[in-house]
Image (cartoon, rainbow, N blue to C red; front, side, top):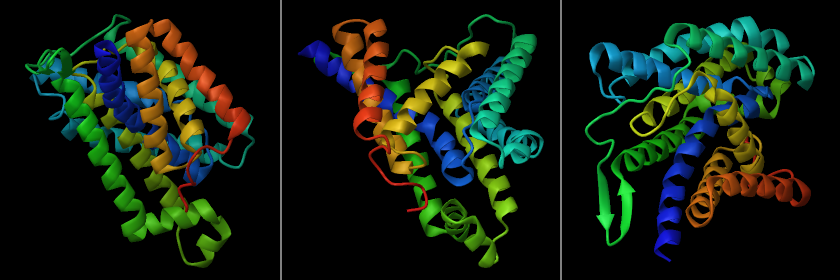
Length: 288
């Protein structure tokens, strides 16, 4: 039972982080109907920007957000104009080919700059933990999970309580109707993609106190993100959180009781069941 509870607690914390990975992906998918397989590479970029700042200035990963946020937003705008905008009206196959190509380019540039070795960031709270009986809860994971929940909550308020959020949901629901209401759809898409890129980069930064970064880690991240989005609901903010928690708890419990290899298999078994029984996912789209 102790092992089960330990796995469950770890899984819940990681589930919040997984949801953070997925929120930018689901924004782009829900608004622009673009499947961005380079999203995982955006997360890795956030990791390596944090590593760069830490190596050169010894800034805490959370302080490095002062660099990560503007850098990822500008990068997102450039990618939108050069890669995303030209393929938006193309078939899904074009989205897949272009964004996987972008993922490969980003991975190779990171490898060229930082090398192919794994890298970590060690801060005073990396090994700190709250111990309750025989249950150990890492401080770094708790802080990352709390940050994830706060950002997801703020993002939800942005979508539902601001004019920009209403414009985003209008574009996601009906492009022609949005144009008719006087909404600049292209500008909305541009800013939305920039925000999605920032969310990806920030999610990479906040996990660095306990995570290991590698240039090729983007593919694993985007595969897991895609599974989360399918389970939670394509283009759903709440679905990203629900899907992340489901995947995190399954991974945590199965890894604790059996092995991480079996946990990966369990995740994809859940995906197959969802595709067979409820392919639309649990929750509604971003526009609803």
